Image (cartoon, rainbow, N blue to C red; front, side):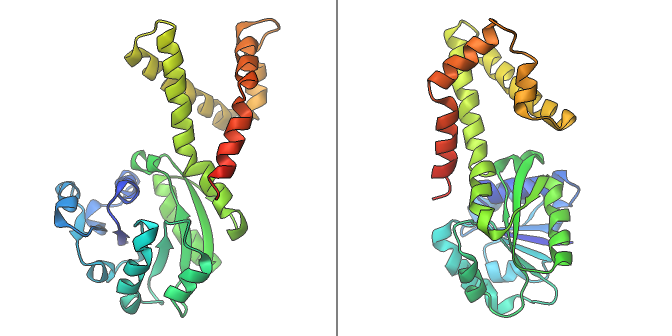
Length: 257
């Protein structure tokens, strides 16, 4: 299997490293960038690299465009003439590109799908949104087998893709902002910053692990630690008085526009 990732930025690089963690040999992944200097670190890790997008996609099973939205069309026009609809699949990692535009940029029968990972792909822990544009069920299954190598995949239809993007791709920043806030609070309470960061990170990871292990609703796990008149319920109520839930929901909505 060969994968071309056009755009060796934070997201493209994270996906490439996640694929390696998931068992893909680095030499089977080609990363591109406009300048060779941007690719030196990836070449040192064993990845194939190129500054010519059209050359990079030849022979790739999956062609992933992970560039900024404002240069997406330029890259698309570079590679469209050399793609093979019978053997290749186009993967769009830019949720802001409408499906109609993708189909116009890549006319014909070339399979196309959205894959929206987050930067935790680097450690094979991405929450990745998968949505078809023009692809068969079998092609989507093959793509999901690939994305599962760098985390967990969640399929959504086109109507809900932006909501999923806000929840997972933008959402990793929201989760990290909570961690930062909790660390600041712990430091104010007298815990050393380095210890606070490790403790809060471990707490968040533990909360997620509980939900995964039990398949439970967050409130069910919250109930286990909120004794009547206890510290936890006082803390939760203080957070809600500060608008915690409302702020999170507002942030998710803003991330879809």
